[in-house]
Image (cartoon, rainbow, N blue to C red; front, side, top):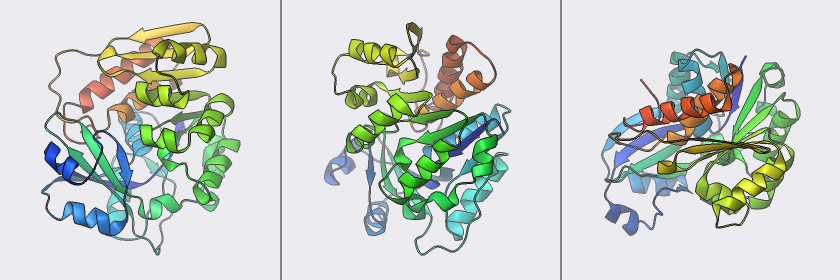
Length: 309
């Protein structure tokens, strides 16, 4: 297997809202907030659902990799319920090997409410459900060892059982890539993430906000200095300023695509990572990896949802 992803198995529920809805519900635009089941249902009660689809950050990247012809697998915890069955069907349809045997759990399958505002930004409210209860027994060690790259998401990191699952997977992997996932996520786990980036990860994906927060700096020059000293592969998306990869003293930049009809930014980072990893595992140059990531993210932001058709 080329790439094995481990992440939150979440069913995305996509709705369009105006900015007033975010203000009224005290939601910060473009971030992810964890909510309980009752708050999730309350938020959804007055909204029209545009689309329901299997999601989760790493799962989106893995589907992108599968669509590009790579042999990939995914581990994510769902319950044996209606949404769990839909989730598994969604991955299987995309030729992703689902390496988790679902069973009836006390907590239902996780769900993410994706709120799209008129500026195409997405704000997420996530009820993790059983996805957030992943533990070391859920990790298929054989699959981890046999994959060329293990791809993880920062969203999955949490103290207790999920952290043990994370560490078990890393300890058995050949090479590890991880996305920092979200600004609030970085701020919540800053010291642990910094340790992972410095000592455990071979490839780190982040956007500009996330990496600046991680190293507690405000100027992007400091990000470059930090990354150079690490001598690991740090890949950063910068919105309109394109993307940059830093590996030791090598700094490679790629400009963003222009004149796109942007409909929804959901999945932009996920598909960028998928495109980049596709290039990486197929022996492309870092520049070509950046270009493939940019191409994939440009396609997904022109449709609703985080999966290319």
